[in-house]
Image 1 (cartoon, rainbow, N blue to C red):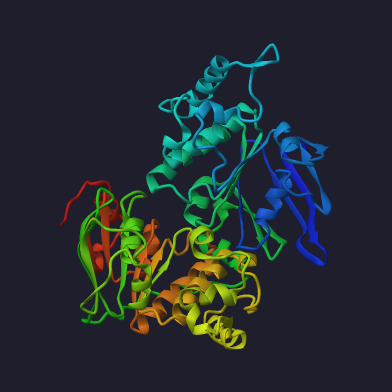
Image 2: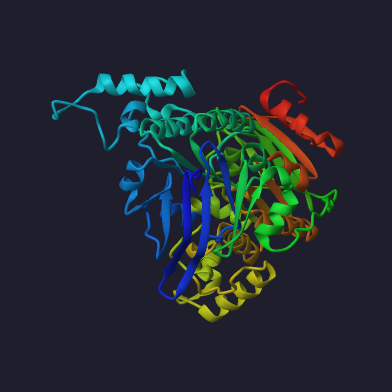
Length: 498
């Protein structure tokens, strides 16, 4: 017990008769990087919310440096030296770096006036050890995501945090930015800071973590040493079964279904040209900010192009018309499903009906039984869990929400699927199911385009890959050319192919 920086014992959380976390034990040593892993819904977020004071445990005790502590709210957690780095960064873009770092607890002179000079000085001292290129006076909204994340870490260090919990810290980072974060994490650990690391990316977990605690369905499964484990062994504990790795099979035909000609929205997309064939899975690779999402938005009719054409089976689309894109069988599965893809409070039924509501209404009334049957049949085929189509979509895990969005487009007869980061924030078990869905869509002769920042994912699912850089398609890769070396070098501009 004496060596433990943090110990959580018998942690249980109940909501009425529903138990979401039951008798979970978790501990972190000083200077340790400890992974907390499990599928969506395993209880990771609940455990962290109790640690950070967002919710109170029904049962259980928390110890810090061997002493029992009471964490009643986020402020008490902060005062105890416990900091959370959220997946969605908690900052105010319009304020400067130093203002964000002292938000809610400004330094004052004489108890009345904010001492900005002292704030800037202290801010600069902390940032000097993390990233001296960050100017404390800069608006935080002007910084890259990776730098905003460093500011969050700096704020934790300013609070003299002993424990820093990082929830999906690399969801918006490039591979090179992750490497820098990994170095920073190791530096913090060497200074005695305890790091809790939550991620669905197993390669990251193995690179930065010393031990891992595995949760499944709200229960503690095991605490393991990373050096004694493999990715397969960790994943098997997480999902309770062995995940079979299936190689990619191509269903690509010669029939061109989608073609874009000189499609542009300067300066973010510059005269893109491509063709996609029936049964093909076309990967779109590149760094964050390369113009990939903006390209999809143009194809889907969400944004107005400055030039170019989109053709489906030779027929031109009305550009900047979502309705026309849907009518031509184009469906977008957006990157930010919570913000752009779902109505959280509405049922799965209603969410599935959104693109084609006329089909499910009669005299302005929803044909609920008709809608329910179609939704049930499609979601059963997609292995929705739980299979309750009257349930609010916001109560589902990320992977199951993604299935509903895919089901929405299946119900509307979509032929061209645009997947933007389809497995972001999704656990490994759900990832394999999404891959299987993509493969099955291709088998049915659908056209599938996939944006992914994860190179292994692009390699795993694609027949062909286009690499984008600074708004342009700079390379087209096929067969053995689709490898991490090529994807990385074209993305950063070391090689040029087109």
